[in-house]
Length: 381
Image (cartoon, rainbow, N blue to C red):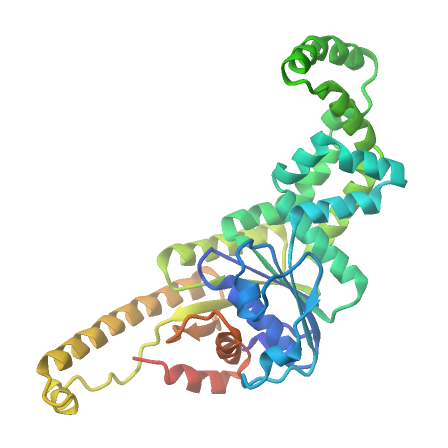
């Protein structure tokens, strides 16, 4: 099993998992591997850190996909027969773009975008980052510019918000409370006027801001885009469960990420989302035949330095203990996720922070099973 096999017939790959397990790196390596095989690929991150930009040798990423120049990969042991594009989501800008798209006219668009209530709400509203991520995914998918789109996501507990964001937004936009606020009538209008008048009058005197006017303008203008937002939310929800979409769960052998991975797999099943496969990073491989621990021979190899030989033997013992623990974690994962053939990436001897590191990860992700087994054996203790 390899990522190439997992992505056969797929257009969208959503990488999810705990923080700190190499998820952003894996997303970039998956995108790179697909591009190396001739596809036009976009990789999208919503991680505000610059790990994706740095690993691709770029100074920064914007809210629209930018082509990673082939020169970045020269001499790195990989040839991109396709194209690799990358972007970092700006949730506020994407939210603004949705307003721009859904507003019935330019006057309404400008009225919403300039409104102080909207400006604050679009920055801090719960779930806006997750919703705008999948909204951008929908936009890129609908554009038909790319053969494949790889999306990096927040850590997995937040990814529950990611999965639920379209439904939550639809429920809010179609809820009775918002309908009353956007178009109050009868008793509701009377109560709104009486109940809020004194409060907002006092606030206006203290702050100098006419919050009631801002709220009134915001909800009146928002009513013109509610239906468009709800329709987009439903389309996004459908996109996540389509057969051409797949979720890859990324984890490490550490106990907490292992439990997170199992938890998220259950959540995917409950939501009816397509689970594609499991990738386990930073695995310490346990050799079937342990290396020699003859201190006398090592002392001779180290020019008579017995202390160094003893430390080397102890270090090997520690590494093998960690490898046995990782092996137990893999057994837990295969049972908990019902995944018999996870893709393993070993603990590398270098930090993955550049193209060379991505290429090293890509080899393990895309190598055929027999070749990967040979590569993993070479990393075993």
